Image (cartoon, rainbow, N blue to C red; front, side, top):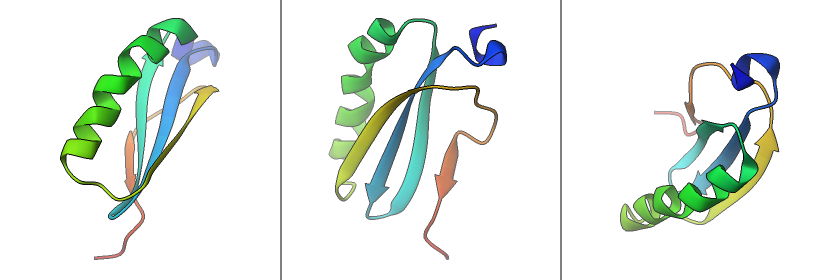
Length: 72
């Protein structure tokens, strides 16, 4: 319900190799997202994704949750 209202918390995570944007969420509280984000980031690091940047956003999101930006 929080996502439908646009008040859910999401992490937008961008990797460079491959160039992909992942959306991790939704979470009702920012604290819950922060508490679980490290597991998601550790998983990406274990896959040897290139540089990883993230930001926490309070937005309404729909599918898709992953956007591949590299062609091919």
